[in-house]
Length: 374
Ligand SMILES: *Cc1c(COP(=O)(O)O)cnc(C)c1O
Image 1 (cartoon, protein in one colour):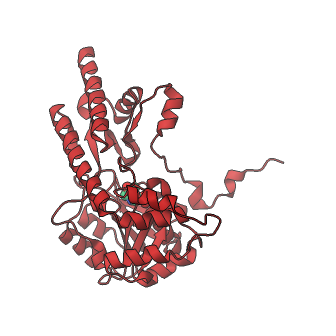
Image 2 (cartoon, helix red, strand yellow):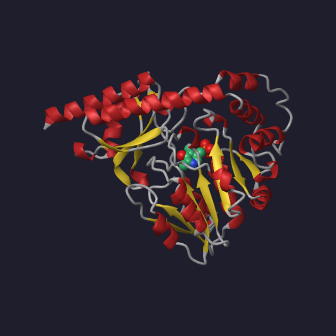
Image 3 (cartoon, rainbow, N blue to C red):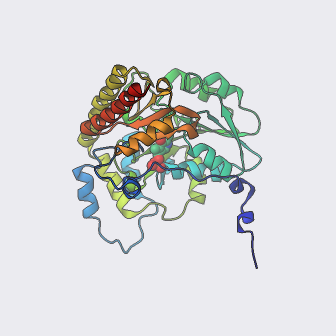
């Protein structure tokens, strides 16, 4: 018997392409047989977790027991930090899981989901997976176009995803812009503000949307421990919302969706402000290092408030992918973003000083070699 297993997919899944993660160091080592590879491709914290997290992980006992499915201790710590009730908090296996849970819990094939061009790749994925219609709003200066987002809302709209700041562009919305958007969203839809890079942003007018959850019942704010807190490998993030929204997500989540190590590490990370501040300072210095180098090389870039930056390589007459491949051969992994509709850009994560230096040197040598050839 031959069976067409692919045909068993639901209509949404049939048209789905899996998320493409950045290339790993091990993968490149295998492919090219080189060592001393650096990876500036997935917006991870180059310092990794702090000493308090490592301590918490090594003292986590009872790995034979199921984790606390209600994440009691972590929720208590988060509730205190954000001034919300614990029943407004949803803990996820990465904040990606929160994005998936809210979509599965609320959105079906009869609905529309709005997000911006060049927005985070997970939004189209979760939308397509439930068979809903993705409404992609053209970007404005690489960022969210507020009035176009508002204009895209109709009676079928169920969700809108807004990343603030956005990945991969690093663009951001200020308090007034985002409030105006929220005020224009009707009750039959939810707005998800994805604040994965919240801790890195140092702008006076940058809003902490968790403070608005009591005012806007249809608002869900997501945060993560993967970026500034340095726990990407443990997979833990959270959502804060009206408790009814948390209730809906709780109905579809796995009972033990977040593991014991992640729970205790996240709690320890919250209590280590020193390491967080060190991570933020390192990022600010590294961002300066990168933009100064781009200026020196006469390369344009999109100003970013996150821990990554998109540099425009169009002036080299090569695509992002071509430069990416040349960087790979020098042991530097960055992220091509042609799948985000940005074929002339590369996204670079801010690394340690010497990592940024290695990337800059490699890029310089590629540009110099091209000058010689032309
Ligand atoms: C990295 C990132 C996330 C977080 O992913 P996790 O699942 O928490 O690791 C969410 N949103 C955006 C925009 C991101 O760039």
